[in-house]
Image 1: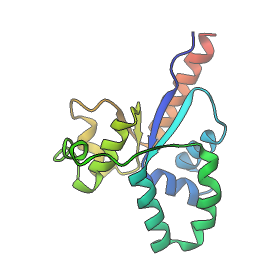
Image 2 (image 1 turned 120 degrees about the horizontal axis):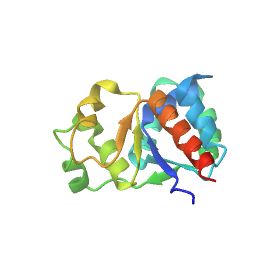
Image 3 (image 1 turned 60 degrees about the horizontal axis):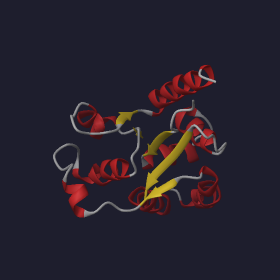
Image 4 (image 1 turned 30 degrees about the horizontal axis):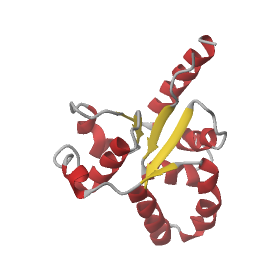
Length: 155
């Protein structure tokens, strides 16, 4: 019997890195999402979309057409902005600027929060009560490969 699909919440830096680079784990994750596999649901937050668009306009306006064209192909579930109470729940767990990201991942019922931001999310990895695993893009690909292998073996 098939398991529920893996729900992977992508932080802004993973999406931006994947769009800008021609390879690497973030790009591989984005490419996998374009396949619309039944074993994987990609998520990000409205907060992240706002952050990505702000950063593109500010730092890399030439990437805006690529972003505009590629984003719909990812079929991401966009988690609505978390409420102030949802964000406040995670104050002190991570840097304040990242609490909306963590709150969005939890709100979206993510299994994994995939981020390249080791510095700000490291403490949260080991905090009790966070219902999703916080992993790097490389760690996520390893987890996804193991999950898909298990899925293939259970058929």
